[in-house]
Image (cartoon, rainbow, N blue to C red):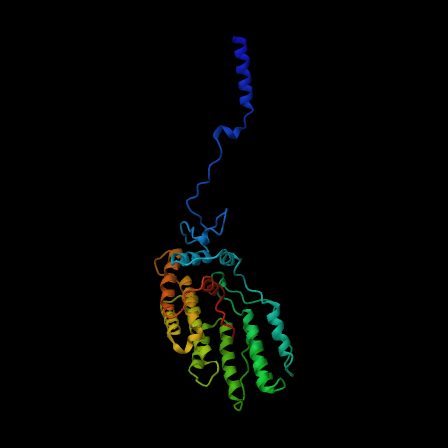
Length: 336
């Protein structure tokens, strides 16, 4: 009996040694994570945009701070919108081939226009400015083409005045890439429409040069000219210039001027077509100028809420993705 028990005990000990080591401590428990410095979830990154914000940190990227701001105000994101916000952003943009091609092909219809100069890269901004402030977007080319079609329809492709317009617009677009010459001045007897277009082209050139102070001054002059077909657009762009100038220099006066310009845009009955951009400009200004003494993350959320509410008093509710995309890429209307 004793011998049989000893044999069984020996067998039990041998079998015990074959048990996997991991069983000795049981299955592994969940990883303990108190907060994320990035806001990213390794299991499901869309959960954040569905409302599982966790602890907000100033180290979060702007797309997550924007999402938190929207969610805290009661907004929601679809999975498609969340994926749009998560898309890689915002290196210097590549101009889609169709936009440049359309402009280049159309300008060839105008006799006497020199071949367009080729540029290989966009302006490079400091890292803290690059994610929201670049120079020209594809709409710059698309709207150049649209305006040229209108000028050809009015005056004909063979008109030397249209040729002068195209040469001036070429000069404008070259400033998307590097400082280039301004469009040439016109003779005193030039028609009023061409003079108005030139004034707008010169203001746009300074905007593309990122000289927001001078661009704002020139757009303000156009905005006071009731005869200019660009009057309303220029008045809107005064606000754009003010916001970009405030973001670049961050002085109290420039920030106050930008807020005043946004309020004027939101309440001006003559600028109803542009009013929806007022809360987007407010969001852009708030993201880049959080209140003094506030943490970067919390400051952006609180300032965004305050300014956007002010600017949207006479506007529809903030779009779910549009305001953030505006902050990243600038307004759809900056297609000078």
